[in-house]
Amino acid sequence: MIVPVILSGGSGTRLWPLSRRLYPKQLLALTGEQTLLQQTVARLQGMTGVEAPLVVCNEEHRFLVAEQLRAIAATPQAIVLEPEGRNTAPATAVAALSLPADRVLLVLPADHLVRDVALFQEAVRVGLRHAQAGRLVTFGIEPDRPETGYGYIKRGKALGDGAAFEVERFVEKPDRATAQGYVESGDYSWNSGMFLFQAGAFLAELERLAPKMLAACRRAVEGAHRDLDFTRLDQEAFCASPSDSIDYAVFEKTDRAVVVPMSPGWSDIGSWSALWEVADKDAHGNALQGDVITQNAKRCFVLADHRLVALVGVEDLAVIETADAVLVAHREQVQEVKTIVNRLETGGRSEANLHRRVFRPWGHYETMELAGRYQVKRITVKPGAVLSLQMHHHRAEHWIVVKGTARITRGDETFLLSENESTYIPLGMAHRLENPGVIPLELIEVQSGSYLGEDDIVRFSDNYGRAESES
Image (cartoon, rainbow, N blue to C red):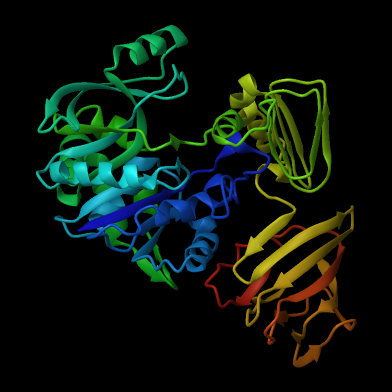
């Protein structure tokens, strides 16, 4: 049996400003109606012998991940929460430790694009024969250009019918001339970061090659506990694990590695330039999404999320417009976007982490206006959802219902509000908001006070198991 292990812990900083730390690229619909996470889970539909997926994700993304899986009717056998990102090897180790030793794990990043699902599934079937024989399988992408942004795998001796090969060596990201030589030789594949192996075989190699990592991950799994629909690893144990990728920790050192080359229309969507490569383009090579007008523009990628964007007489640009930030970059420089994110984080700017629309397990809110001592939000609560019973030390709130019906708890009283009705929550008063109806509840919240941060919450009870420190 194959268990898909979906690694969804990335932050996707190179796709800022659309991707943010608390809403990263795997949760975005960049290449169709489904998000990259949903596409990854759906990629194995129709294959026999495939169990429900096990998802490993950052605990800050847990409700978004669960909601996106629910939206495609995918019931995971577990959603394992990383208290801190430690790269792909520890994430895979805790998945392997959570499953029987004979289970075959298909490890898939949640943020990749695969256009030809049938070719991908055939490559998995080829790899399965070798994984069941105790080998550690990786999937190589047949290169169609001298790409300098990927690592490479050099093929060794052919195995069986020649659909798989021993791995001779892994190669770091090369310069362009070296990459050109790799492509021309026909002996190299791009390293896709997708893997297939039995849980026991992987753990045996991890024991031999990275014993401290395995020991920390074992303690993290042994100390794990259930939290609603999630599995929380022991924080202290997991954070004590060395941080490393599967490639470095195991595959570059093992003598059991096998590579299965394939060409399924793959991309890691690692930058705006990579997204331009796979997007549909007009006659001038422009890939345009949203309300965009161009005049004498060529080979540009433009995404207009909230308003009209017009380009005149420019070439090879990436222009990304969101509600609170606009990025303009040359397509050959888009890898440097992550330095902008680093500067935003260093400066304490919220744009590194959040959009104006912030999702919560009960719905979402969107900041409409923010000044020194007041903030205006639009709040949407899903039918049947309930916010936590809470109070604030530094702000009062005024709620105005614009759609639906709200059940309000304010101190010792509970009452209903309908459209165009309002209420006031004084500073320091315990309160709760519920949507008892069958349509989304929408209201305007006006906050006023000396401090308006989301961490000014004293939470008394919560249906979603959030700690007091969580917003």
